[in-house]
Length: 214
Image (cartoon, rainbow, N blue to C red; front, side):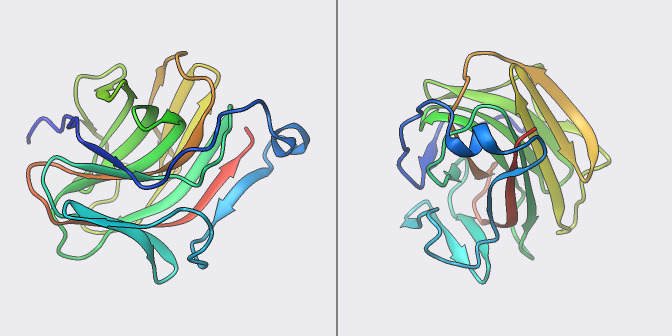
């Protein structure tokens, strides 16, 4: 088992919108209500697409797909929203014959160098962390840790990330796998992330992305 640390090379798929004050949806939506959702059935729903020598990201047959061709790279995409307290959920799965990689959720994305992330690997490990000034690190853990709740062998994992005040809580398939605390980022965009470890060839699909008001 290798260390499963994070590289320092990131590629954002969409420019940010400004992180302003609470939106009307945040104010009027009751607890447990949906603030935002996307099943990726429409290729113009705002997530953007990109194709570069490192890989590509974009809509694919009713899902959102990341293909990472180079080792030690992370791609992420986000819809250009801004929230404070959120509960994020998404279905994530590697495609057949893909290289080992990671996939997950992003909250409070202030800009392309500052955000929180929640990831699982295709071989059953998880991590909670932050990127600050382009430097990625885990919170409360030195490297990704194994958990039996994470499906492997290409199965779909239902990921949930709660970002509530300073609490960062991670669920996989309705099981609490880890939590951390950090108060630096208070508000920002939400999104999806996928990355490679020691080799390229990572291919991941996301579907049924939902942002709830906790």
